[in-house]
Length: 237
Image 1 (spheres, one colour):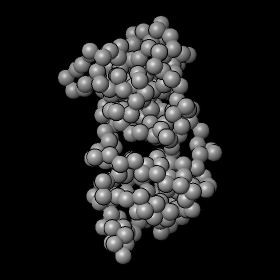
Image 2 (tube, helix red, strand yellow; image 1 turned 90 degrees about the vertical axis):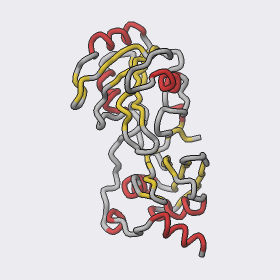
Image 3 (cartoon, helix red, strand yellow; image 1 turned 180 degrees about the vertical axis):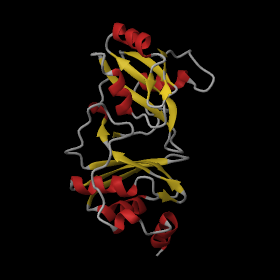
Image 4 (spheres, helix red, strand yellow; image 1 turned 45 degrees about the vertical axis):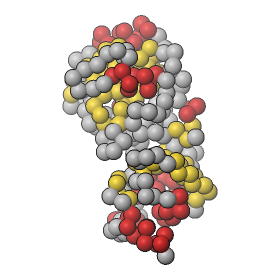
């Protein structure tokens, strides 16, 4: 009974248009997914920005609404937790992204996306990293990577996301295996248009900063591939 009341509090109002009609069950690729990520065999989803009041049973109950669940793991954090849900089939996982991403649980919108193993991202700890500022709100990892992948040694691209709002923080980082390509990207693309804004490109250094972004901590996060401030975590532990 208590669990039922929790669910009602968490998901009020209960009706969801996407659950009442037959939805498009193929999610649009977005967020912090590795360049070239293939979701065709993926059956697991990442759930971010989870309210502290959400429990393991409640999370499992909510996500079982789109299909049978093989496993569910909630990782608790003080302000907002995150978790992973494993389905028995890909269709159920895709449906959960389409119907549950952005749903409010206890007044807090959750982020639902494909989960992937950290090994699916290339280790860029020894690569050359470029800071990219003034990004349009609609620029995703995939968009950023597409812009810089004209340089053959471009290995990764990440937009920094605000965990609370789920929105872009307006800057990101691009990694290169070659220092020459990184320098060429800075020279060639600084001031160029990407989306609706002219981007700013410079070396990502721990001591660098600007008026509206703190590059130091974010650059460190990207270089070391940690999840501290790099926005939405989509690594499957």
